[in-house]
Image (cartoon, rainbow, N blue to C red; front, side):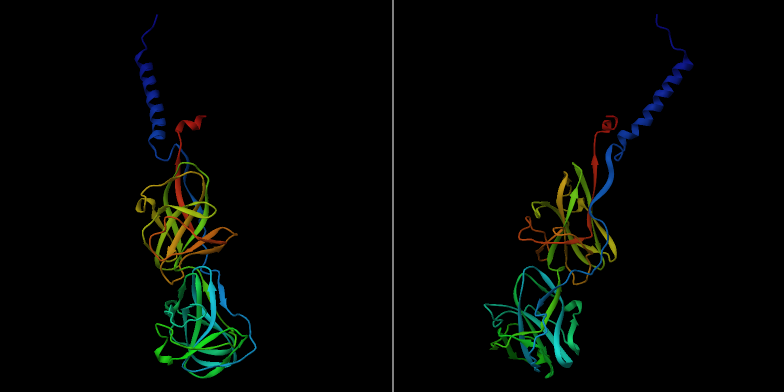
Amino acid sequence: MLQKVRTPYRNRIIFDLLLIMFTILPFFLSPTIGSAEAATTFGFSSTGSTSYPATNYGDTNTETGAPSVVANIIQAANKITVSGPITIQSFVLYFQATYAHNLKFAVYPDNGGTPVGQTLVKQTGGYSVSGTGWVTVTLATADYINLSAGTYWLCFLGDTTAGTVRRAGTTTDYYVGQTYSSGYPATFPSATSETQGKYSFYVTSVQVDGEAKATKASLSKNSATINSMSFYSHATGNFRLAIYSDSSGPSSKLWESNSTAATASAWNTVQISEGTPSSLTLNSGTYWLAWQWDSANSGPSYTAGSSGDGNCISQTYGAFPSSWSGGTSSSEEWSIYATYTTTSDFFQIFE
């Protein structure tokens, strides 16, 4: 026969049940409890530097001939071919005899072995140049020259006949009269050709502005809700971010941000909700975290990685392409990562 529970015991049972209920309830209400892990990142979250990998284009040999730099003559000296987007940051010449005057530099496209009739890519301001041997002219950021893949002519224009620049061989170059103060014409004019070889003259370039770069990243969790992307910048400028799928390199665009102003010497974070699409869930696998940069300032943060860690395409600053095609593989790692959370059934904890 059942007996009625006396009041003191009944109250204690009710109290204990309430205590248990309010202890467990937060596990169901909290957005973080019941997750397989707290918010975490994938990508490259270390900061690097602006010591970008440099590539030389032109003739880096010390040739044997020694013609003078002639005043008020545009010398289309060396033809170069670049396979991907580059930013020229310096011009380098070898002087047999001391040169202590002014030079302007320029780049024209090639058309069947000649710059004649081609539209000027860009010219620099004037630089006071002095020295013997290899002399490097480091450009002001405003004079950086961006080139896409193609063939071009490197040119110099002096204000004084002096010094001697090494050259040798039988390759063809072109020269034409032009006053130093006038600078380079918008279209390369009719010119005299000569076959006296390459000049000891080259450019040093990096690949930052005028392209899109991506760093490979591995996501280890399924059903990962991507919350944000972060990009480290050493300088001010504007940037865009994106996430691409993988198919032996970046493939299809999954998400992208709008243009965002960068704060110098800081991680710059963009919420996924601020981009397109406004939400993103990914499963485990390989992805590519991409960026664009619209300034000649050295902003993106670089670290040397391993072969295949990076990829690059020529890209005018703007919306990312829906498909990443014709990319150039690299060993570059850039300071860029994504933050995500994953949610699992609370009761998996007790399995």
